[in-house]
Image 1 (cartoon, rainbow, N blue to C red):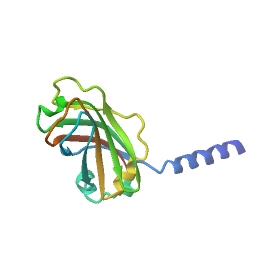
Image 2 (cartoon, helix red, strand yellow; image 1 turned 90 degrees about the horizontal axis):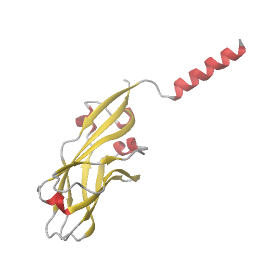
Image 3 (spheres, one colour; image 1 turned 45 degrees about the horizontal axis):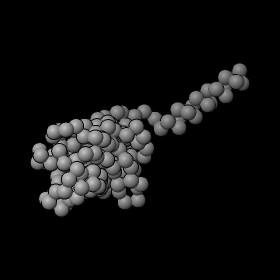
Length: 170
């Protein structure tokens, strides 16, 4: 009998530690334009975009960072603003950065398919602590691009990110 009480107590502790029920929702950003300012050189270059986080627009009215139990990126689509420009890129690494939060690699593709105008990056298996980014006013998207040749102008890429949010039940 005593063992059963201990088991029930342990189950209650586990249930309490899980933080209660959550609702899973998927959200996709609009096109976010990352820019690598030219002139660009053969080899490694960086394109960035500072994304002002608006949780009301992304999740709905009344949500705050405290309502987010877990975040996972499930897709990253990259499209060249100028269709010819993506053919200059051999490989891409996509990262999130923010003030006081460690930069995190969330996607990559190596090599890019020839003559592609739109690509899906391989999403990183390890994604820990992404919810910390949504407590910030802005997230910096960083895309490291390995170019196959020099390019005089700016290189602009549209990024569309699909997130899966586990939201705490209200």
